[in-house]
Amino acid sequence: MLNEENAKVGGRIIAKAWTDEGFKARLLADPAAVLKAEGVEVPAGVTLNVVENSGTAYTLVLPARPTDLSDEDLDNTAAGAILCVIPCGSTF
Image (cartoon, rainbow, N blue to C red; front, side):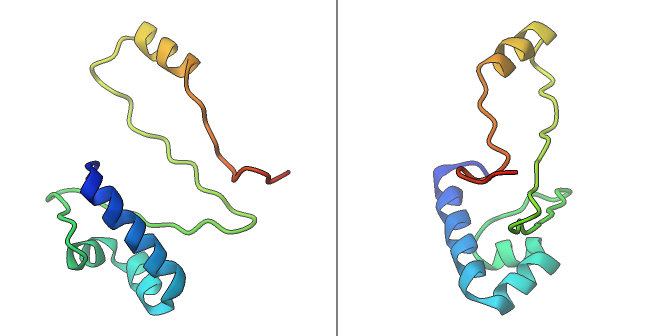
């Protein structure tokens, strides 16, 4: 689900959820069915979770650790990573 076409579909799904409360409710309740209806194939055995950020609640997704990288590789990757947890301009 990381190809360019799926990224476009993802953007369309997010925009639709912003403008259609019924669609957003279905997306939050059954993301796999909604994505399938929108043309995104969800592989068997994959569980999807959809959460909504708000002005006071943000979601940080911790990806699975890559199995093909050494600890040194991970250290080098992390050193160059930029992490944006909250929207630019927000203050806490």
